[in-house]
Image 1 (cartoon, rainbow, N blue to C red):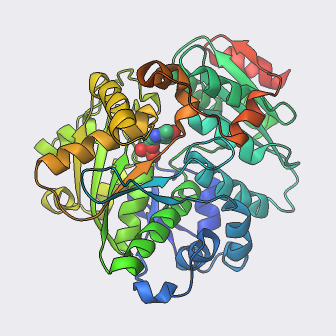
Image 2 (tube, helix red, strand yellow):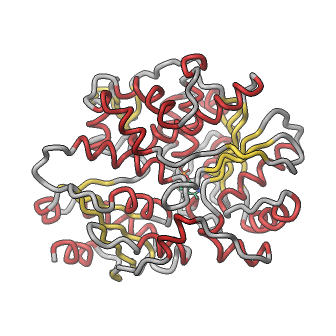
Length: 432
Ligand SMILES: *Cc1c(COP(=O)(O)O)cnc(C)c1O
């Protein structure tokens, strides 16, 4: 299978090259030139993420050396579960798809671990070490650091906005050491992202390092995210022969796009509803047809504070006609007042504690029911609430139990350096 840029179909590459390049040379995003097609019976007898993943991703790797190694890549990447947990007290049939059982307690672990396994194989025999630069608003940096930590072929530099992530997220970004350097930048996420972009264009840094990014537009992070939707969709289908509907918290739209792709290739998935926070670029677009990116607004669901969701470019490439695109997904925005109220209410009424991101999906679930929605619903939970205890605990009036993987990271010493928000500051640190 070849990947082409969303902006120019002439540039065609295989999977390994699309992963290594990250972004297409014309600034577009890599998308499959054509999609494979599956029927659910092809997955008969397969129940775990690694098996389903190897079968599902195989056609996406066709023709590339990675294809042969997919079973091994999937076993290494998907070594923690993504359970579908019933929500018995819910006002209508519903389950929670828990994507927070990885090393850093958010769904970003799936993409980061798969990407690291692929790059380890792509870089085999390379003479120069890879230097991965990541700007993070909270969860990506920790997942990437965890996935690449202690791998001898790579160094990682993580940039995050000091004071603008939760205490526990900051700890997860800074607890690594070794081949991971963490920079607490005196600026915003946009400053971090700008510094990384400038670093990629900087002659001195390109001379000294083989630079790479691990950001969420890499197809090596999207493909593995299809796998948990495949598994959840198949599980519900096998149980009752029905297609479950999914409600997905959305920021840059990578997680939701993976679900849309999984349905597009034939997996049993019904409706897909996006939940956004007060950043309304997607909801406004689906209403009006006008694409108007804007600056992001800070909210309690900070990992979704995106004003220009880049994966929309991939969705528009899949459905160039607006009417057709509009028919594929619904979207609804949830503000901070509603996030707080949902965390409080569902803790009492459902006995369920949400992180602020997942709370947007839980709120949209209630809205859909109020509008008469039927069927089986899956609320996609993108992070463990213990990661956002500073927001959640005052609302529910008790402490949230810390998962063992998170407790382990919280006990580690911190290694980080503060950095002024300029390319010059980053350059001198990296070259020092
Ligand atoms: C990254 C993230 C999101 C948003 O996912 P996108 O793929 O950017 O839409 C939602 N919730 C959490 C906890 C995240 O870390």
